[in-house]
Image 1 (cartoon, rainbow, N blue to C red):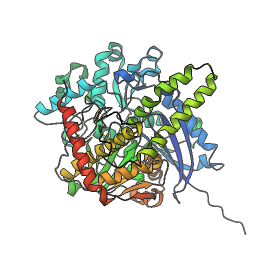
Image 2 (image 1 turned 45 degrees about the vertical axis):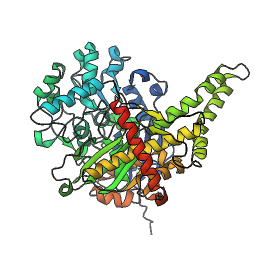
Image 3 (image 1 turned 120 degrees about the vertical axis):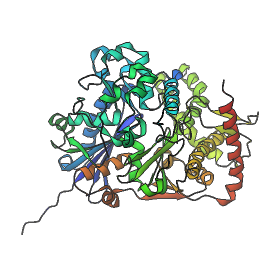
Image 4 (image 1 turned 90 degrees about the horizontal axis):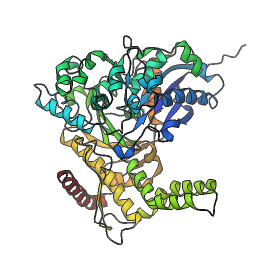
Length: 561
């Protein structure tokens, strides 16, 4: 009797972060994470096209295209033999808002020879804050309009978002004005290039990006009217009409993988490709997000996601967040987004601050060769935050007398304002690096508490928090501090690649392995690996320190020139 061999089926999730792209292969029947690979963007790693002193952060589209081929083909070297041919669907998530200008054929301008080294022709990364003025103008226009077109985006437009970035670049570069036909988000561009739908006539947009960053809402028939935008600047004339009027949730398919890309990636021709979403939204799906649970993607910044039923959200417009969008996270529910502009970035800034002189001394020393010096520098940097955390964890809260503000990269929520800055108060001669580091950790946790309290004030329940991303896995000290300050349990997911896992969950649906997202989550969502429970003895202390944080914030916010 012949033995029947059942072949596994896989979903492929691709997660484009700030520094790298991650590919994850998941068994759709068991939820097993079979293989993963990571590729770092080479031009970004060299710091090309970025000017941090000007808040300019641009990424070349070639980094995205080249890394896609590398990471997927790298995955096959780690996956079971023949796994590529068992892939039944693929989906993307990316950072956002990260838009780029494209020409009348749908080609990203930086891929054209005449724009190859022009930062204005590249993707404007989420953390690029060059468009503060433009964001303020958009907010002012919305406040003066008969219909406030920002009421579903928290009421304040951010320099991190689509329209502000597009307008800033158009004002800065006449060559881009002449060549640009329209603008597209990174997450939508990825799905378009692999399905051959980059041409504006066939290009389609995801609900997630359009709703949270591009002011799309079905109640006004898509985007605000053209005269709203021309009233801000004639450079925006007609752009809203060149954007796709319809948007699609991530459980739907953009189309099949083209023959060209199937060959490049080693995948079956015609593999279904799902509509994309932002990384935090798909990470929340991997975390089984539900009403009352807030998912925090804790990396360089944070992105906070929860969902609400239509009945619970009703006609509420939640103030000061990053949007409420029907179906942006889970189909059939309203997705709510918030976040902090710096979390891990604040710690990285402090690490660079304390290590900078030592790194310069080592780099310039004549007693060791350059390779040894570089190795020593990297070893010091790799261990700095761990050692500081070990010492800081032994310090009692508030004992150092320091209060810090986490707005080193501006404030995303509540109430977006990228002109504000970080601060440290209470410094004395006895304030050491560990004392300052503890104050910075508390500051990031206090910034998150402000978001949680805003949700609650607006009638959105937050009873627990789910942490995903690198920081949630690396530091017990930081996570316990967060639980104590937030006053609720914090679960950490087992998956190391939660955002890519969320993308794989959607890929399994578009590939037909599961009838809907809820069914896929039952099999594929990540279990919890650890739970941090708040210490009730810390509540009074942290309430007092939080009040000091709020007072410092009010002083900095109100004291700007």
